[in-house]
Structures are given as C-alpha cells and as structure tokens.
Image 1 (tube, rainbow, N blue to C red):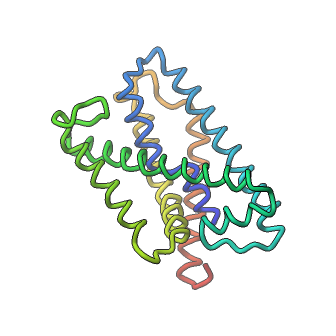
Image 2: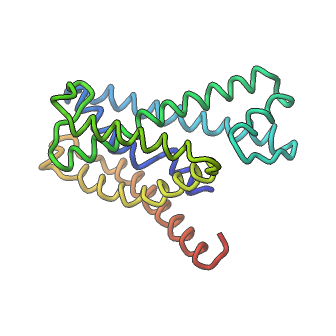
Length: 223
C-alpha cells in the first residue's frame, strides 16, 4: 500500500509529461523560475490533498467499519456518515480524476513514444502534422476505456496494482532522470544543485528499498 501511495503521488509518467509540457509551452530559460514555482506548489498541494483524503476516510469509513470494494461503495458509505453533499463531492472528485487520467496519462505516453522514435508531437500540431502522436493518443484512450468496460473487472484492484507498478518503476526512472539532469552538455547552467541531488537520491534509495522489500515479501508469500 505504501509503494502504491508513493507511486500515485510521484508517478513515473509525470516525469515525462512535465518535460514535454515545458517544451510544448515554449517556456524560455529566463522563465524557468516560474515553472519551478508551479511544479513545487503543485507537489505541495497534491500532498496536502492526499493527507486529507486519508484523514477523511479514517474518520468516517474506517471508524464505522465500512468495507469498500468499489468506488460506488465509498460514495454510498459517505452519505449517511457525512451527508448527501459529501457523497456528491466524492462523486465529482472521482469524475474529475477519471477525466484527468483518461486525458493526461495517454498524452504522456504519446509524448514519450513519439519522442523516442523522432516523430512529431504536440497538441498544438494538426492531425496531419503529427499523425503518429494523435493515432497513439486515440488508441490508448480506446484501449483504456475498453479495459474499464470489461464486464465484472475488479476496478479497485486494477487501480491499486497499477499504482504499485508505478511505485516499483519510479526509482528506475529517477536514476535516468538524475543522470540527464546532471549532464552539463545537456543542461548547461541548469544542472541539478547538490541539495536537489541529495533529496532525489534519498527518494531513489527509499523507493528502491520499498520495492525490494515488496518483491521479497511477495516471493515469500507474505504480501
């Protein structure tokens, strides 16, 4: 659960999407400081929201012994505990998260694949200018929707396992990102500072240790 929580908060796809979005927006080097503020404030806000989600669920669902097997269970369980408006707010938040995931995650993958093969990318391009990009983007959305619509598929376990996979892959992605971010021939004067390297390496080591522990416990039949 800890690996999955970190995997959904610092997901690998975010690393690829962030750099692609900066490039596509045409952010100039002199404006990097504003992009940095944007990223840092977003990270803080995400953690604050995640903290209060945990607190709210602990104070309502867990305290009342409610077992949640589906997203609908969580929404219905909140109604008698916190009122109808709370259930509506939960439903709206889930809808917003779904739209966000369905649009941004395939976009991040499309950016990465097209950049790897040297194909044109970008939502500012027309379809005929970036056919591989838009074709891959549409295909990923269709595949994702098809999986979700499979009758009887356990959506919560699917979501949970996908976030655990994100958590396991995170330290691998961060190692390569660190190597790139510390190359003066690529980054010029924007190479990582020693403090930033220290924070990132601590994250890599911590997530690597958690991933190794998860694999070990799974192999031993204790996870």
